[in-house]
Amino acid sequence: MYLVNKPVHIAIAGGNYGGLSALKSLYLSLLATNPDYDGTSQAPANPNVKITLIDRRDGFVHYLGMTRGLSQPDYARKLWVPYTEMPWLQHSSITIKQNIISRITATHVELVDSEHVEFDYLVMALGQSRNAPIGVSASTHSEYLSAMDKYHNIILNAQSVAVVGGGAVGTELAADLKTDYPDKLVTLIHSRELPVPGPFMDEFRHEVVKVLDRLGVQTIFGQRVVEESVSVEDFSPAHVKHANLLPELIESVKRDATLVTSSGAKVHADVVFNCMGSRNKSPLVDLASSSDAPVFSTAGIRVNKNLQIDDPQYPHIFAVGDVSNRAAVAKFAGAAVKSGSVAGSNIAKMILAKGGDVELGEMGRRSNAASAYSRIKLVLGEHHTVIQNEDGVVPPEMASRMSAPDIKLGKALKNLAVGKFPSHSR
Picture (tube, rainbow, N blue to C red):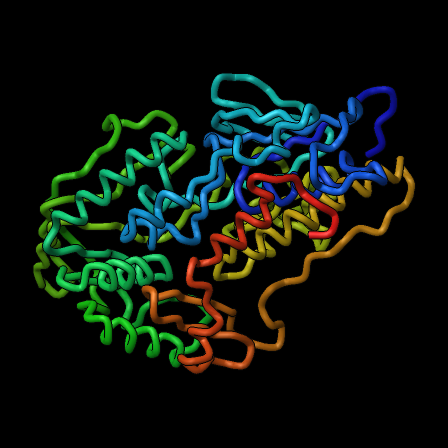
């Protein structure tokens, strides 16, 4: 799409790993274009480019570390970075709209207050939804800090904690809680015989179980929770406005609970965390398909290797990160960052080509096409990491060396150019 006699307007729906990566790529490709730009100050104004970032939050959240954040208050405070701490986002060509997206069409993004954000190009970086606290219900930095303080006090005063759902998130949460509160009874309940469902080796799952046993996590596998008597810890009104659009607004923490499993066993816990999986954002996407294949399936938004929607009607719309069907089965923040960069670069190429032919960048699939298994890394507390890659399960000593102590928080902040301006050299 080549535009004449008016600024090009790019909208980015979602301001976390993928969305901010796309925006940074656009900044470097369309704004920081002067030969003398060296990343020490703001790029010059460009009235021909308008970029609108839309997100309900006022900052970036390092979701990768959220389970650790629930067990370590000091670490939790570092996980939310306000957009105001990224000076490059204050560029005159960039507008940040803190609002909730209700609908995405081929021409505009509709917000819950009925405002429409028109676009010439769109990057959908919507991510996936989990109930709070993993999903983070807060919209502002101050709300987040207040909520995390409350969670920490609840955990601190509990003698027993149950985690329902033994996928990657639930398993990491149980391990983090037991590592940082070794005297508390931590129970992980999962409906299957082994944790972490998906295209992973049983060898990998058995290694996860070994670590959980070593930490002292009590595991109940092969049983579902069929009944519960609880007090819900509700941080907001019972019927949360817009919860139909954003499941993360729904609180999942329960207190003083008695859980009954499918075997009839009863588990009492002072606190219960529900980690029963994530949901996609398909209700937001109103894009008709020109074929029998839907634009948005259970695997995600259908995109081509250039991350454009795989439908000839939408060459101007890109999808990145977890919302895309090219995301790995196990969702990776790094893959979202990479895909955002590719999409942003491709949009810039299309604009600069002025309607001519252009070779767009590609995003390969993360998993090994020759293998039935996917890659995954689980960080189980501060001292244990279990990794499966294309060659199998990585030996424990090597896996620990491959794990960042801060769960890649420092890397994320560096990539986002927090406190500085992006540079072509980094």
